[in-house]
Length: 110
Image (cartoon, rainbow, N blue to C red; front, side, top):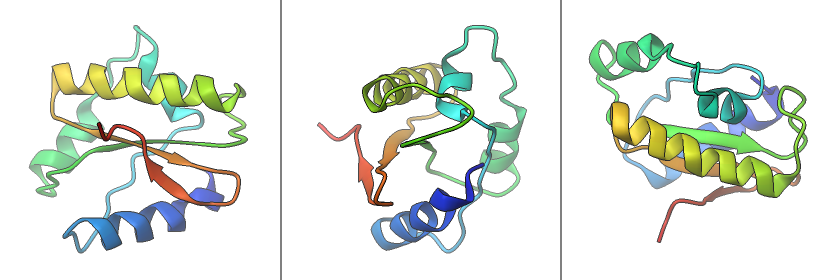
């Protein structure tokens, strides 16, 4: 949702993956929202995968998020939990972290 991270994330994805377009499914504090056990609204992800032929999912969190006001380490843990949750349900997503300088980093690489 936060406009400060939209362009850095889009540019990073386009530079690192062979995609022409990036679907953005946003909600304030999305990393925290996705780890909520009661969150089951996966229809937007399904639309992106089936109707737009998306083949990569990224779970993105960022520094200083107003919708999920937790420290950076908690954000990163939530991203990794969300990645595992989505992996079980739909696809194999990748987790991205955007620092306070706007630097995008993949945090699910082993």
